[in-house]
Image (cartoon, rainbow, N blue to C red; front, side):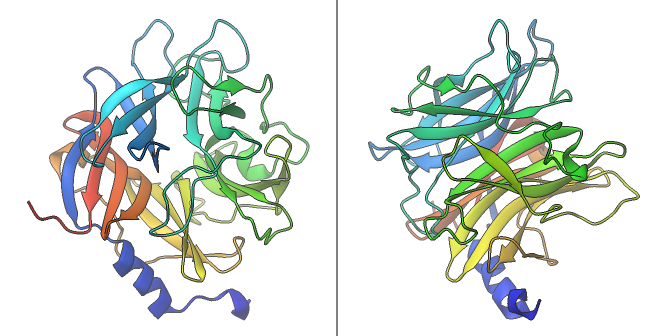
Length: 331
């Protein structure tokens, strides 16, 4: 196990490089709607895109859909259109919360989405029951050649389900948000590595596990259990919404913790994509303002032109929307 240990100095260096103490407030919100799960990338035309989930409480068909916003400066966002919509029938007819796959993981990298087989790929949590994240949810897959609204096609069946033969005890209730890394070195013997949080039966506890694939379509679980969890079996808690970054010789997983009615963003580090060492220090983002006083969670972090941008889901005085914090700011 010594080969997997990461020093306190290395962990602290990650924290210092990625901390964002300056909160700029909400950058995407909508009256009467929940805006959730930011996923930010640079588009082929050089502008920025944000994939996000939208849920309208009390709607006739209440559930998640996936939308796209655009920006020229990472600060001012306008909604461009819908990527995954509700449908009349099917296993995912009312729930479709997606995130773009195969994003460049390199810290200060291109921030673009890679194409595989000339397609952009998206995994999503899907379901057929109305409401806000109603159990059970399964993992779906969609693709597009253009990254434009209304262009995504979907596989007819889920790629991961709670009743799969290789499903583990921590994921028998529902599957949640995922991110897919294209590991071109095939560290684990597979080019595509997925991290996702899932909920067990019984007490509400969510943990982060792994799956792997050779072709983006056929997936298998990796390992006998989760790779990141809070470790408290006595109280409900969540470790969720992972994002993977390559930082020097380390892999960094940004994720959120929900515990004792609070939620905040933190990270873990790994040398091999399997053994993850959690940061035990100050959160990267935690509730502090009226607009994120309930939750400050679900991270997407990037560095561009010397500035670190930390997008997150804020829940507070302005409802549920996307907020932004940065490493520094000069008017």
